[in-house]
Structure formats: C-alpha cells, structure tokens
Image (cartoon, rainbow, N blue to C red):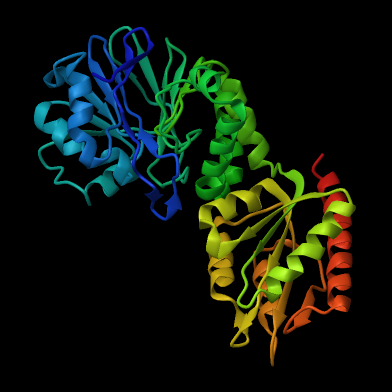
Length: 405
C-alpha cells in the first residue's frame, strides 16, 4: 500500500506515473506524480482525485486508511483531466459525499460527468469548511493555470494544498523535498521547478505575484506546501515561494541560449563563432539544435537565460519550420524580461531573419539588431561578423541584465 503521512491524519494517497514521457506536448523524461490527499477527521475529506487510468490505485491507497464509503467531502481544486477523471469512481463508492468546487469548476465538470445525482457546493475565496478538528480555507486562483483553479489551506496543520502551483513533473520514490535532496540534489529539484514553471506557468507571472501577495496578506502560516504534481515542500516551503516570486519578477541567469536549426549546416556553422564571441565577452551560453531537442527543453533554456539568439535558415523565403514552431509556442507563453537576436543563412533569397525578428517584436521582447546573415555557407568574413555579433550581443545582455538587479 502506497500511502504517506504528511502530518498526523493527513495522507498522500496519490500515484506515481513512472512511464509517462509526454504531458500534453510537454516532454516529461522523469515521469510525474498525480498527488491527492486524504484528511481523517470527523468528516473524512479527500482533496482531488487522479488520472482515470490510476483510479484503482488511489482507491486502494484510500482503503489502506479508511473505507472509501466513509468519505464525506471531496474537494476539487482543479478539473484538468489528470486530477478529476477518476472522480466518478470515487463517487460510486461514496455517493453521499459533498463535492466542493469553484463555480467555473462546476461548469467545466459538467462536461466530464452527469452531475445531477451528485451533491455539489460552490465555494469562493474566503469560504471555510469545518470537518471536525480542522477548518479548511478556500482560495480561488483563476488562471493558475485554468479558470477553475483554487487552493485549499488546512488552518490547524498549516498545510497548503496548492493544486498545480509549486509542482514539478517528477516521478520519485521520495515524497518530500528533504528526502529528494538527500537522494539526488537540490540542483535537480530546482531544475524540475524551472522546467515546470517555464512550460506551464510562464504566462501567469503577474497573477502568481498577486496570489502570493494575497496569501501573505491573509497572514497564512505555511509549514507544508503540497502540490498536485511532484515533490511536497516541508523542509523549506519558503524556498519555493521565493523561487516563484523571483521567476514571476523575471529572474534569469546571466547567460545566452543559442536556439537554432539548420538545413545544410550553414546556420550551424555560424553558431561556433557566435558562441566564441559570447564567451570572450564573459557570458556563458548553451547551444540547442531544435530537431535534436524536445521543445519543452528549449523553452526551459530560453526562460533560464537572460538572452537568446535564434538561428534559422531560409526556406521558401520563410523561417525554417522548426524555428517557426518554436516561436509560435513561445508566443503563447508570453515571455517578458528577455533580450533576443537573430542570425541565419540563405540561398537565392532571404526572409527568415526578418520574419523571426518580426515574431520576437510581436511578443514585445527586447531585440538586438541588425542580425547577421550568410549567403549559402559562411565565409571567413562572415565568421568574423558572427564573432563580433556574439560579442556585441553579450555586451547588450549584460547591460539588460543589470536592470533586473
């Protein structure tokens, strides 16, 4: 039986998905977990469910603690498929349970299930639920990251059930941050946090700052932050709150990501002198070829870096398709606080570099212009231009980075 006590009578009853490698297009090389939680009190309360194909696992975990028919309350913090699609299996075992959910959550839930036989209560920020010795406080968090989202605070135990906020896609035998760090490393955990934030929560920085501010204004003491994915924060929950505030404020490393693709290696050849120019100016860099790299990894490296250079060959007077896809994906994430530039190669006609700059400007990102282009294959003179382009871009990145100190 796979249950873990978070605090006395509060249990993790979730599941570990070791095998998943694609989470709605977001590559998950380390798998993920679907976390849900059971509170044993006068009124037994379940917070969230799990993805439908793991329903029996979570039910068995609950059975290890209590008979599921004794569940009186089910709190649905988020209606995305990986958290709600086993709800019908739970309700079949506890048909008299009351479901607590936001108004938008109920509307969305009706697209999954026939709600007519279920007892559903709408809650909003500030509403509370007494379950015996404990009082639960509901906090709506719309668009973090769905319109229905909310968090639940267990007052007496100082536990924040944070749904998708503060999570990571990481399957691990460790349930808590201190256990994970002991077995792996703080750097690996931090990387998982950045990866999750960059690919899922990047567009919502201002909302994140607002909600953390709301938590602080309410004076909530937090001993544990328990998200719906990944590691539970008990050693230092303040660490993840600070990380989120820093990321929401546009924190980045003083370095450059070179994200490129190439058709006949001409654009690829340009990356080498550009990289050397960056390095000689004292700025570290990472070079990423898109066709050899998962999109979500490229997005993470873009987010970690204060500056990014996009390299694209021209195909039919347009950006190379993988570059166009990357920039289209980035547009939806609405990045801020980054400086960008473009380089590339072309044959009988150009167009890709200009189109890439137009895309970056449409995102309202800072741009360093003009870019550098090479006809067919870069000549020695082109390589010198690439080197200088790298050096000058590094200078601009350092200047831009200083604005965020």
